[in-house]
Length: 201
Length: 218
Image (cartoon, rainbow over the protein chains, first blue to last red):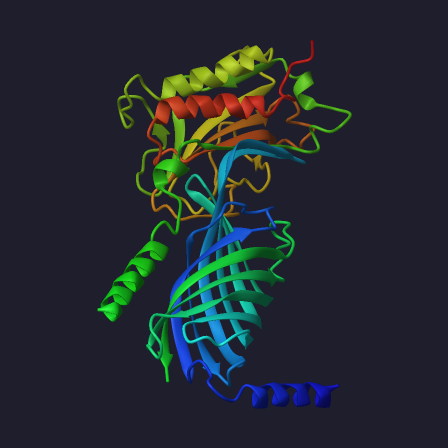
């Protein structure tokens, strides 16, 4: 099985060994996230950023890493929570501070001079800080976890052979950051990405 | 030129992501937190000690104070707390009103009360609103002791909690000659609020609303 995969990678590397996009690219940009697992936060977050590096192996393939940070939040209106021995009434601001770092492998579908669609699969780690704010009090739980991230998007070069470009992508994050403390399961959501890219030829 | 635009974009991005990392304080303190606890041995699915009570005693003009910023041990309207319309008396009055609505009669200390009501403000102590367990009072039933331990943290430097306790007098002997705290309410924060008196009174009413078992037997 390993041999077959290695042969496949080598064949793709050889097939696309000409006219690759660039030697490498560094990018940094904005990211937004829409939780699909909504037990803790559900609103679309626009407060995130990410950066990364890609090494283009050939016209079709690349490898790289991506790191990101985002804040997702939600408001729970004033509610009374009864439990054995008492009750508490409060409104709650749920905040989810989400850090991610993945390594990824990329596939480029076409290699026009300026517009290149891509698909990638990344895997790595996430760190989630669940924090609830209520009045001047707060409570939190931190969860390091495994993260897997498929992503599709477009690379856009301002001019042919320009060192400046842009990148737009949409990714699906699935991470094992369940919290027993807050009774939460694994988180998953859609990430929207826009970034400026510096190509190195 | 493009690099300059990208740099501006990055600066704006970092600034955007860096702001609003916590809720605004004005939003946070819109409502006071109200937590109530009862003694699970005294209020069960089959019995409720509150139905056996008929009367209570309460201090009329002062609220206890436990603080690490002052040596005062009580709050007195116009002396060490100045809220337009008063604070101490309206708070005591609101507690009395709720207990009267629940069917209990106020008596003085010589009137053989079933339970005592303690009201105390805890300020800037390493305590939280989350009371670990109803304690016993070893001495008199009007006691303000540090029976609280941290459960959650506060990120606010100066904070205060209003605590209301119901202390069992009727079963003093059964409880090993100790005054057992049957119920307490913790309300906060008192310092960051924009309407100390109004929101405290609302919170006191909420404490009784979420404690429907405090009711005299008909």
